[in-house]
Amino acid sequence: MREVIRPLIPAEEIARRVEEIAGDITRDHEGRIVTLICVLKGGVIFMVDLSRKLNLPVEFDFMDISSYGNGVVPGGVIKIDKDLENPITGKYVILVEDIIDSGRTLSHLSKHLNAQKPASLKICTLLDKKSRREVYDVIPDYIGFEIPDEFVVGYGLDYAQKYRNLAYIGILEFIEGE
Ligand code: IMP
Ligand code: MG
Image 1 (cartoon, helix red, strand yellow):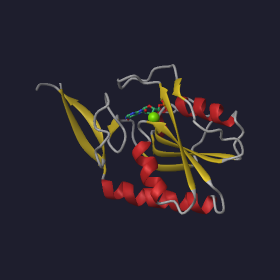
Image 2: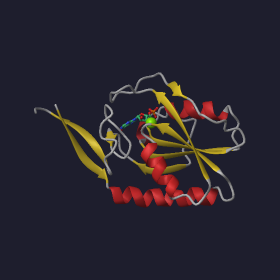
Image 3: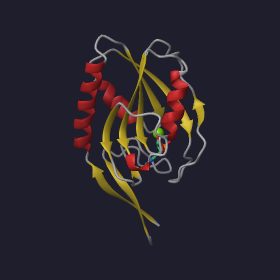
């Protein structure tokens, strides 16, 4: 099996959309200090690029969870491998995600974060595979792109830890043969 990547969203288009979302977030959080929470590792590139376009004071924190393993098929269990370093009680929080698929991760994470009683919790995702949604209790506030039901890589997203550093987002395809 050979892995081939078919381009879906070019780097320039991502950059343009990131700037637009940053404008929306800046407008919605005027006068606030914002805590960006990145879900490792897929959200790293998006969060860093987004943060540089925000016209607000910003703090970073990181969480690591496991749900998928290294494959394409979603697993049922979500485990927190690394929790926040600082409490978010009373803070203006934005959870930055690479992609929302079934919505299970998001649902689990927002319950976990809301339990700390932040002043506000907004959800920002670069990609939304809306047609795959199984859990509907959390609706993202900021969405980069709605994409079809395909497995995508690049701009933070991986397949078996590969392709995160691609500047664009592409659809991963498996071709028979060498
Ligand atoms: P959910 O819990 O089903 O919404 O899964 C979300 C997580 O699955 C994302 O944060 C990704 O880590 C992973 N995921 C879902 N779809 C893709 C994809 O197309 N490419 C890479 N990772 C994906
Ligand atoms: Mg993720």
